[in-house]
Length: 298
Image (cartoon, rainbow, N blue to C red; front, side):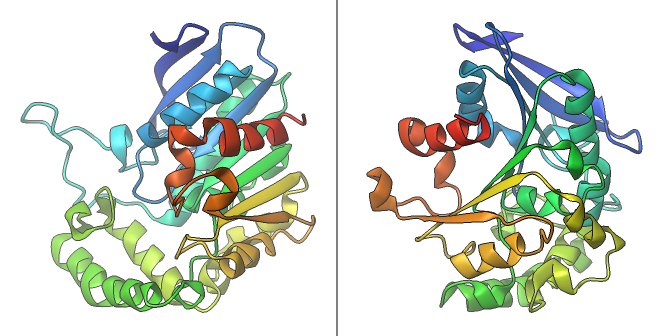
């Protein structure tokens, strides 16, 4: 256990997914009274360390916060049997994006709900992390959800020329590589290595007009189960999570009326935000504060 701030404890933990797979996480705890619990859910191919600063900030404000890696990502990727601190090959590793939701995200929500059952549970979803909220059966345990650049990521709703680059990469480079290598390599430009099944399902959704809503996943029925409050942030310079794409995802939550807000970089004194910029420390007193106050009902 160490401390990123004098008033925040940080503990590296492990907890089981619903099928028993060991997931690695980091728990951020305030030294003072805990008033809220928060689960931060990662974007595709993004390790939890990206969210460390924001999680520490929330803990400083009285939240018990958990970040974690989906199976096959970051520290939730199995270690190699030989070599020093080397990850095991993802060749043959069975996982899909729908598995991440059903097995990993579901377990993380349950873990937080059981451990902090007297505190309201808020859900932060970055990109895929927001999409997963609609797919999990226990999303009714969440009181408030804040989406950060989370969208129905069909290529058709991305900006030009990025939309054509993404479509070409997915189908002409990514899919053939995943089939040839048995996994999708991070060096191709996607971030971290991805299990083959994750990348192929992602590519299929990106190529579909309505993203995951065009799939036949039984879990889509869980979108209607969420009855908490939902605020979705989109950033005007994000080529992937455009306002129409964010609205398409938010519209899937049919039992509520989600709030969608567009933020321009100039609104917060920044030159750029994009798809990942929200989590930079420079936004501590603007974007971070705004989301924190909202999930805490202040």
